[in-house]
Length: 360
Image 1 (cartoon, one colour):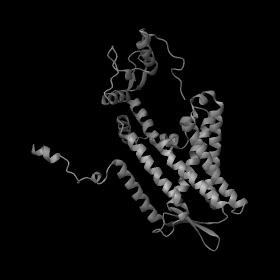
Image 2 (spheres, helix red, strand yellow):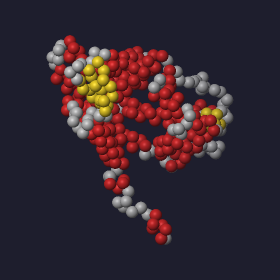
Image 3 (tube, helix red, strand yellow):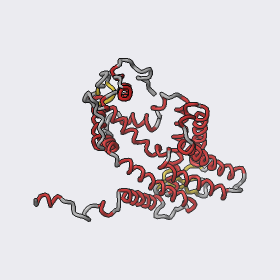
Image 4 (spheres, helix red, strand yellow):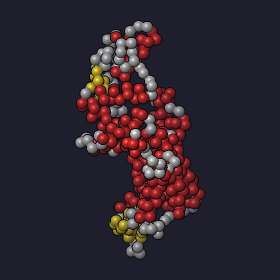
């Protein structure tokens, strides 16, 4: 009895007790980290651009939405298993290759065709470049100073990284990084819109709010960003203030929308490395054979995890023959479901589906 009393958690002894929820703790730590990094990057807040204040507020709201969505997703039983095992497998020898294919080259889309691969490369890397440039500027982690001799100094986290000519190539890339990313996003979005409007299957499956609205938001942000450059160069700044506000509001709305719409897959994308490692690691150990046709279709570990998760949710799919539905390959699973309605044992018919081994 005494041992049991000693193991009881005492209130107020854990860091988690200082917060109302995991969401509150995540937000506090994230905002505190941003403040500390901004304090260091701006040399104790001596280089703060108040024109970027709106972007900062939008980013913090985005973080709140992201943590809310991630925590809600991460609390699900299958997600807990997926993340726990994914972390353990993070240091596999194939992880660098997997990360490159999933996050850099988008190799997994290559099988769907050159057109869709180009479309995703343009949109994906256009957004990534824009975020990598915008966030450091917004929080003061990176900025530029110019001396009287026409040389720019690039400052990163309060340290002078390099000094380059104001009319040099590196300076040109620095000035136009967001313009380059805008052209990439516009190209990718235009390709996606063309495909979704022309492809009959895509037209049947797409909805305006979920599939088209994110593309229009990205398109509007990119066009208004390029309009700022056009106004500064061609119109000598005429209308800059109005267009600056329009662009800023469009970015803020997109950031707030991102965690709750289709664009949420952008910040969630790194977790695809976990999924790939999970499938490859356990597929190498043992393959689960279908209880009907005997075809190996998934790893034993994944099949058991599915059965365990269903059990946690008090869901049982046990057949009369004594096997779980999760122990059948997809074609046999479909045939088994048909058998329950038709009364005919269609899952025992030895006929393969036309697309049974389709890939991509």
